[in-house]
Image (tube, rainbow, N blue to C red; front, top):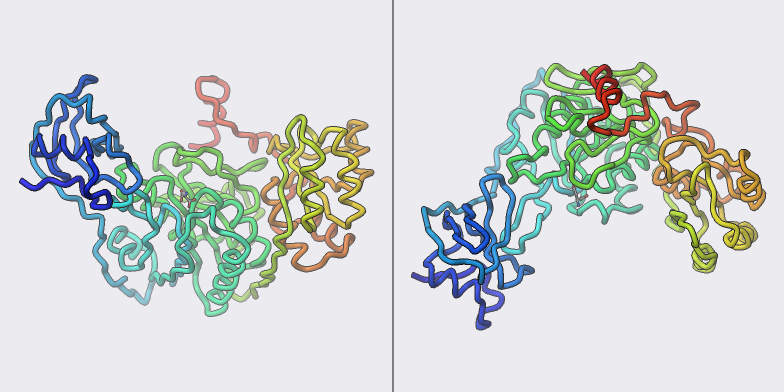
Length: 465
Ligand code: ASP
């Protein structure tokens, strides 16, 4: 039997894993039980990826997780069968029903548009409209969907160019008359894009719903399909005409939460329920019965309203997360390198250490716009409380109320894309466009999940039925 490890790149090199698989007559895609000195593992042998070493056999377990079994711990391998996995999703044309609303889905990349490439071992973006319908046919129950791939990147690669491109594409589609927009996006920086779109695409007449997934669609626990269905339902039917993020609400798939684009943040690196509204309550929830708003201070769907597009960004802006013992050269180097705006995420109510003060003064002299936010995430910058806060303000640093640091970062880039006049930038920064600063934070907007504390559990269940 000819046995390879599924990767020809290292032909000619001695591979202990390959020799093991050859000896045991267990080619890739065999369903096996591997008996090792650490116990028995059952699963499917996957091809070795380009970046993996040659010392481990990779098994996909029934749970969908992959594990590596070191070759020299293996005593024997029992082969039960063979199951070659094809992650190609069949392409199907999206059906058209004239009674259903038209929704446009833009793809930018991320896990939601991905599947696993077993040759490279990486999750690759693979957005295609036909694939989407082939994998989530329920979308046709909700709308007539048209799709367009704008980008195919993981979201750390989204930036001003892509933000502007997405804002323009969304506004152009709205001008053509559409019931709602869905934007597929990587989750890692979805909150940056949601915020910047809230500034660039104002007064949309219809919902603009951003969606992603924490787990790719080849995993049994994937949230891709349910998030996409919830986001599409929101875009097609919701009365909330704002930029929103729609993602898993609780840890189960009971409902999706709708978060205002300027008050949302990814809060967990792997939970599907990772997005949370910060300092406020979410706009609403969505499940198979439709959208249920939790509040009524949202912009309503108004098909006759004209969308305002203001797609500009000056990328000479930085976000500095203050830490004790930070040295002034961090600020100096930004100024020396021509940065025009700096957002500081300060400690507590908005502080940095005294050694930074001369650097802040130099930044002001150089005409740099400096704003203070809080790294506590919840609550307001309050620089009048301590003398240190007052001193920092005297150096020209402007408190940005309860704007989240990332939101302040994109807002400053957007403001500097319009003007460099200090008063005008300040006016733009301090005039809320879409909830990025709020007059107060409701007590039930401080919802940090702390399992096991009875009052918190009771509070959560009384609010989120
Ligand atoms: N790294 C991915 C991204 O942000 C993660 C995801 O999509 O969930 O593009």
